[in-house]
Length: 466
Image (cartoon, rainbow, N blue to C red; front, side, top):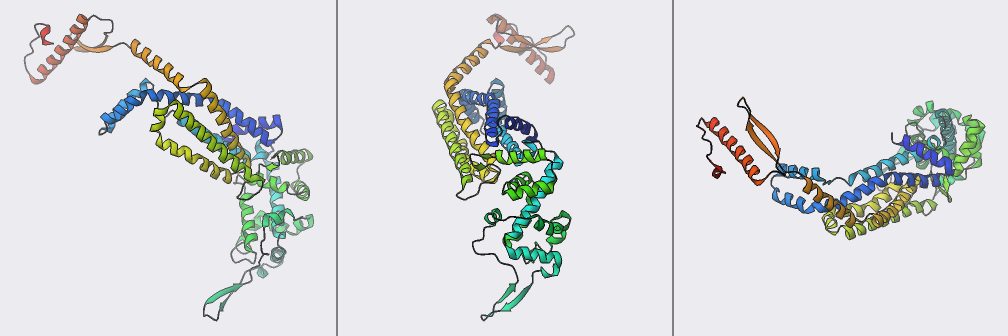
């Protein structure tokens, strides 16, 4: 997986700066520096491609009804240096690195602190139990329903009764537990303090082995639990599952929610003091100027919303600057790239979607990557302008054409009377010698036709046959 090698790079960066935000900035700089030669090659290829545009258009027009021949001619151009796909690699690498960074950000215990798998599992399991307890305690009626379930499952089952109204319509009335108006579960959980006694009282419920039996009654649509609590409990087991990416961040967020949570998670996980100290350090270092890079942004007016905003602004700025530089340096090529312009215009909105779909740390990397991309574009424009690249490429093309030797295939007859094809260099031959070679080639062709049709071959008496 790409996340593993990138994880080691991020680990080195984190070890140097001791902060996830600064580690991401340093990591992004390293990745951009490593990709600089590739991006420079892309810019050179884009500039050189403009020299081939007249030939490309000529081939496309000449062979518009013969796609096979058109492809053959374009392949010949590629052998000379034309590369229509040269700009794809940087874009592919950008997304590959992004998904690698997402894996690294999702797993800070693995990649930042290098916790063992055993310690991670213990921390995650303990945090899951605390998260469930806080979720249930957020609404006293839901918590009581669960305690009833532990004592007698039959008292928790949701029942419905059909009631016929005055208008003759039949509706169902059940004993679903309600929640207060304006209930916000996440805000409520931040105010909940879980005691060890409450965790112990739910110990039978919190064991993963009992969850499968409970899903059919306690968490199902037939449960007495309120919809927000029931949905939250289901999501907890998804987010803390062994196969999900979010489990480490979820545990870390639960750990940092309060000092009581920290004590409960440390004591119930059984981790030693060294791991506990590193966990606390990671919890502090995941904040960057007050922003928790482990949380996922949402459409709300809080500190996390700044990450999507910055990503959108930087993405739009990079798109605008790249388009401006392209039109300034390659006006003819820019006119031909209508579909590319549309894609560039879509990128800011794609960035917005991505940033709202991943933890803030990944969105932060995406934003910083755009910022470095802007700086890189300005540097390349300053020191490697396209007109200079084209002039150098044009000089090389002309030199290659001048030094390319002309060749001709001549058919000769060996001592045994067999025809032999031989490629002769003709760039240094005299006109008389070239004429003689052409005559031999023509005579060989006539001889072959005479033998094919059973006719007598008569050798040309002089050069006039040519």
